[in-house]
Image 1 (cartoon, rainbow, N blue to C red):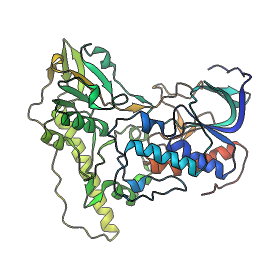
Image 2: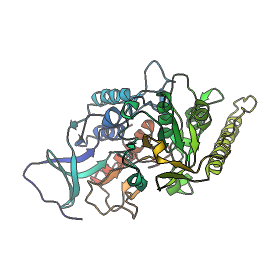
Image 3: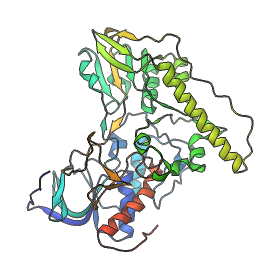
Image 4: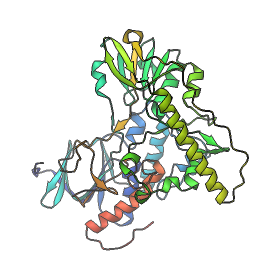
Length: 423
């Protein structure tokens, strides 16, 4: 870690917020309510990730009634629908205008480091000196691509879920999609719908029905309190923060998209991709076990939801039948690489904090924090990470609660001893 030098073109403020997505805007709301001078630095446009860094057909996994931020509940005409990613960006732009957020677009943060008890934020357009910093660049700034990518033959087109925008980027011919969480199942279905043969390499995943007993699964998890579970409710926090996103898709007919539906559509299922040798893709033989575990966890969740409903006096009909995942009898363990024209890595995302010149990372490169306050740096908070404070932290509607708590932490750091923050 090096001490950054102070340049001539330096602006001063109380707090710099890096990123103007839902997390940055949510905490801006509370900072403004407390009259804390701040600025939001956004490298692109407001909601840039939703507008520019996701595939064109993407919709939210959460229903519209959960698309809410502090001071702005959802008031549209389709509360049970699922917003397109491009519409999320527009909605966030409207929210920024609604709260009069001090956003500066087109500013790329290059370094954040300590300077004389404060923090210097260096950018492509000057520098800012602040007492507090909010890291609101999110958990999905970069695609997480396995080292196997280097072994893929050069004649195979390679894309990640980060740079995939539509099937038009893919050459004709069979495609291998690696990863079967929300992104993987959606892209496998979309690519197959284009007329291409698709093979889906399936690893650990979370299976959920889109609806259960005629209500969206997120209604159940919201009303039962599952999404409100906090740090003290979890035995293994590291595990909770690494659970894949559920196999869900937001569609007008509220359909379920799981491995059974994909198989019915004609997608070939294989085990987790474990190697590429001698011009062959090699897959694990654990497909049946992985699917059985996902089925077991889903059934356990649904049973818990039924028990909660009974305790709340909600009348339940007979238990809906849940079909087990239908696993092929003998899924191939080896497939020739020349049988594929393209591969799409749907192996998740990761945060990018490479701009931090701070001693705040663990041995795996993950930022160390306690409920959002970066370890060793009381004036720096992080938002938007999975299970930051609760299960809903990474969802749009979870940003407000985290923002309120972390704005309070910043108030304490700035010397305001007030014990509450305006709602």
